[in-house]
Structure formats: structure tokens, C-alpha cells
View 1: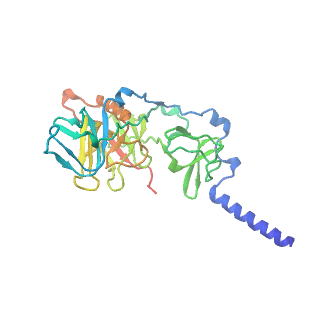
View 2: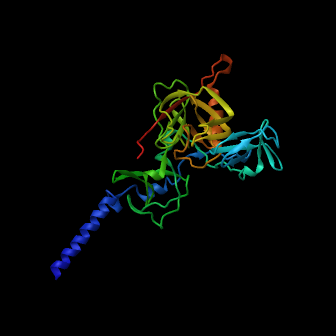
View 3: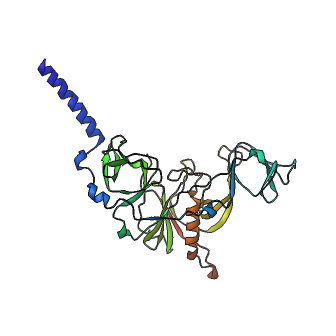
Length: 343
């Protein structure tokens, strides 16, 4: 019986070893950087933009679900009808059963949601490249890292909240995917983070200030010459309405802009007062989005969504690129590309 038992134990050991090999390409003891190195570089050397509550709260945004009508005056019977869609409006004044959302635009108060709060996420100012010893990233979900590449989340590890800023200390490939070390014994799948990956200035970019939009990482970076100065998470177009790649220029901009499209179609949208909007590719723009907090994931109709805070910063930062006195209304270049392929 002993030889059979030994064979069974050997077989079980082989299966377990194969399972470990499938999870990770290195042994736990020699994966990643040493704890002492990581502890000396625990927090990324970047500075987030300050949240301005007055800026985020300067409008009373509401959602309308289902079909709705806009009337020229309270109690009017001649309203313009709209179908079910993705609809957000701005409350300007309320009078009982009626709410004004624009000049000669009134809706019934009962169809409005409670006030919508804009995201409090903010991008970061970047130091000189030599001040960042490792790649900086944001976590995209609440998570606890695995002890080893390819392993399960460990209850012993820190709980990293969504939008936490981390360094990528090392990378190990497991079953065709990258696992990143973000702590001494913290490894996360590549889909769990969005990395800040500055790029070289393309030859086609002819402005001092310009913006790169990485569709794979869902990260935008602002540059002055060759130096990256600011980075943030974005939400670009969904597969059905992709954000086009290429080099463009901002050609017109608005502090607030009405956006509506796909009338009488399933993807109908009606968005009042979209803030800090800069059009660069026909009807595709960089702009603030007060209606969601899904930054780091594709979810738009083609535009590049940012938080109100980030869009406001980018709008003001880019102003010096224009020469109004000489009739130069061409804004900063926008380089849209993808650093990887969607799975």
C-alpha cells in the first residue's frame, strides 16, 4: 500500500505545483521589489487638484427618466415632446408644480430626480519626470491585493479604495496578463488599475500645450512642450460610438454647452449645460461630466468625459495657447491613441 500512497501523494503534489505555476511565473519569495524599497517610496509624488465645492455646486442638476415635455410657460398645453433617453437638466427656478430649466423652458417638477452630485475625483499635477521613480496609477475598484501574482485577494492586505493613487513597483505576466506590484505583498491584475504613461510628442503636434488621450488606460495627460504636467482619468466612447484616434486641434470651446443627439433613437441623450467643453474632432469634445462617476472606464457617446474639476482646470490651462489679438482661434493639439488592445 505504501508505494500506491506515495504515488497518490506525488500526483497530488504535481497537480498543486501545476496550479501554482498557472498562477504565477515566479516564486513568492523572489517576486517584486523588497519591502524596504517600497516603504521608502510608499506614496506617489503627485499633487491632486484641490476640490472647489463652489464650482461643483454652482448648478442644480437633475435627471429625467422616461418621456418628457418642455413647455414655453407654466401650465401651457403646447409642449415639445421628447422620448425616453439619457436626460439631465439644470434647475433655474421652481414654482410649485413647475420648474424652469432654461429661457422659456419649463417642465413639471414631479418628473425631476433629486439633485445630482458631481464626482469629487480630481486629477494630479505631475512633477518633473525624474521625481517619479515608478509608474503612477489609480485603482479602478475597491480591492485588496493578492499575496503573489495571479493569486486571490488577501484579507491581510490593505483595502485600497477606488481612485487610490499607487506606484507600480514591478510587473509579472501570468496567463497572458500583467500583474502589478503596488505594495510589499500586494499584486493586482492589470484591469484593476489605470496607469499614467506619458508619451513622446508626436511630430504632428504643433502647439506648445497639448493633450494626449490614452484610450486603453483611459487616462489623459496635459503637456507643455515635451514635459507632462497634469494627468487624470477619463471616460471615452463606448464600442458603438468610438472616440477616433489621431491628432486634432481644439477649434471651439464653451464654458457651458447644450448637447443632444440620436433623437427618437434608443441612445437618445439630452444634456443641458455640459461644462468646460472643448470640441476638437467635429462633434467630439473634451468636457466635464456631472452625471456619472465612472471615470477610468469607457461609457460616453464618443466624447472624452472628465470630472468637472479636471475639465475646468484643462479649460483654464489651455487658454494661453490662443492668440486672440491675432485672430488665432486654434487651440491645443489633442493626440488620441491606444497604448494597448481591449480584451
